[in-house]
Amino acid sequence: MHSEELIHKFRQIWVKRVIQNIARGAGLREDFREQLDRFQTALEQVIDTGDPEWMDSILVDWAASLTQTDLEGKQSNLTQFVRQLFQTAYDVCRESFETEEGFDLIGSLIPAYSAAFERAAQFEMQTRVKYLTNQLDEVQESLEKLDKSKSDFIAVAAHELRTPLTLVEGYAAMLGEMFPSEGNSPSLELINGIHNGTQRLRTIIDDMIDVSLIDNNLMSLNYQPVWINRLLGVLKLELSPTLEERKQILEVADFPGSNEIIFADPERLLQVFRNLLLNSVKFTPDGGKINVDGKMLPGFLDVTVTDTGIGIKPEDQQYIFEKGGRLGNTALHSSGKTKFKGGGPGLGLHIAKGIIEAHGGAIWVESETYDEVNCPGSTFHILIPIRESPPDDKTAKLFAPLIPKQPKA
Ligand code: ADP
Image (cartoon, rainbow, N blue to C red; front, side, top):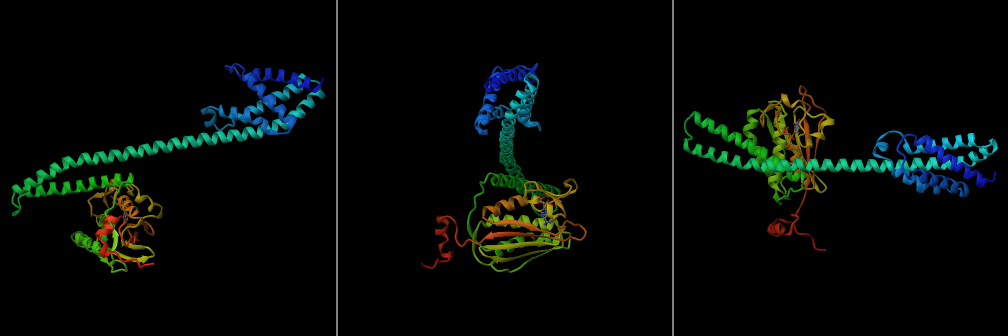
């Protein structure tokens, strides 16, 4: 038989057989026959020209039509399908042609099928990668949405809580005025109880608002001249009753750069150091020591807060700066802002990190390990950029006399 006739006959039998074998029983797609014809034509082009790219068009279409189930499964569906097509071609050559004709046919088809396998695997892989990338993008998008609705909820809840809290504070203040402060009247004790409770609640609400500002990149800083040693002095005074109660010693060193002007947000830095010092108080046993020191680095002031407390495991040291990054069994925590291992909402370090990063600095902790018996202690580093002038012109004009003059070029 002439080779063209041979190929023509082969195609007729092969298409029929594939339809019988592969699509047996299943609802056959109308254009399936047409697609098999396209595939066989492409194979013949590869045989004629030796160029495997002839396979691309049909294989790309088949790869694109893989369903979600195909792509989620581990099996390689397209190469599997091409393998079935080849198996049928082999059977047709063996069963429907004279031995020699069959050998010739299969001999010419094998190189073309090998190119088809290679390209089918490649296109299927590309489709799977694309599918997985889309899936990942979708997951990322929904995580971002979830995070956004969480911080929106926090912001709204915090604002809503503020109003009734202000009412309670107002009525407590009125009650306080109605009862004279002298004497140890039981009602005065009750009013103080309400006052302490509302103060605690206000701190938590303010922290929730700060967290939502940080998470939405909305924290704005009020740059002013700052002397770090003055901030630390204020805090030392503020914490002295607590330190006395916990029999702890707070030492603040007179380190280089601490008494020089830098431009930063003093209120926010005060908040950072307050959070860190209160944590040191909380996680250091009675009688322990807290030391604040620092050094100048090129462009930065590296302030360290070191305590002789329970320490933090290296694997937890990143986690504690995350929102709600409390360690250990929170159920066992005692409550209270300054009690040993007192529990908190786990927002203090997240806020400290947000504030320091908004300044363009960095914050991290170093600690050997966590050990409540031997207390290896922790050292928190707060890297503050040394700004010699505020970033905005208006504030710069206001504080012009404090800003060092740039030497004229
Ligand atoms: P909170 O104090 O409200 O739990 P923070 O964000 O301030 O939240 O701290 C997160 C966690 O980091 C704490 O619960 C504690 O486990 C750990 N931690 C913070 N500071 C120290 C410290 N100085 N020593 C040991 N552990 C600490």
